[in-house]
Image (cartoon, rainbow, N blue to C red; front, top):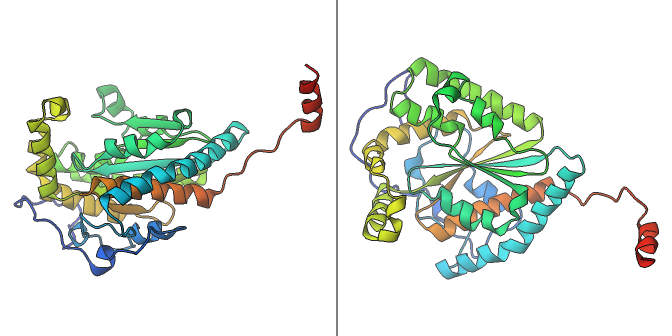
Length: 312
């Protein structure tokens, strides 16, 4: 992809075709990836980003079928719940570490589905889910990061952002809601903000849910064909769809310029919903395992309390 010059307006081009996968991304492992493997497999390498080289239908790291994938996701439940509880207990005992899962993607890419199927495996009391819509006039006056700061998870919590501060270098850029000088400065502001969070104990996991324009069309058609899904359909989605190439340019720049060692991006192939849900949940599990929160030690005499309890 040719690099866009600073402040240059994104070009209007026809809707792109489905992407072809690089060999490394399209290969399937014979078994689900263990340890930290899936993060390494789906992490975006440093340097120039071209999302057209990523296969949206890939099942990288998982060699099974759709049914196998659904079963594997359910099988993660006990483990991810246990690690979440450890982190929550650590926070209740004064620990300051937390996890922030950032979900970005085009309309219908499945941000809500990830939350429903992945976060649904965990205890709601340890979750803080925030869905960001268009900022209010009052929020705009405070700066684009102000409302984001209010939603950062506290110690022991797992925060999930359905859209995020990246909208301010995505839709704000594509729809020309601010000048190029403004959105260009925001990349560095985002990097500084994320570095600040990381230094304060927040582990950031940023997932771009990558779907093809053909898959998006199919999902929008399905919503129109099913009266029970009409509430999910937004006529504005078609307007945004017509700007697909411009959004891809904006995502290329955002991922490339805000892909740091402490806050990396992961590209999640998302044409297959079951794989998307398994992959994001697996990455979250691997992150919790690496943090390795431990059960807090008792701050009382356990044997004494056993005797007191037995006497009641």
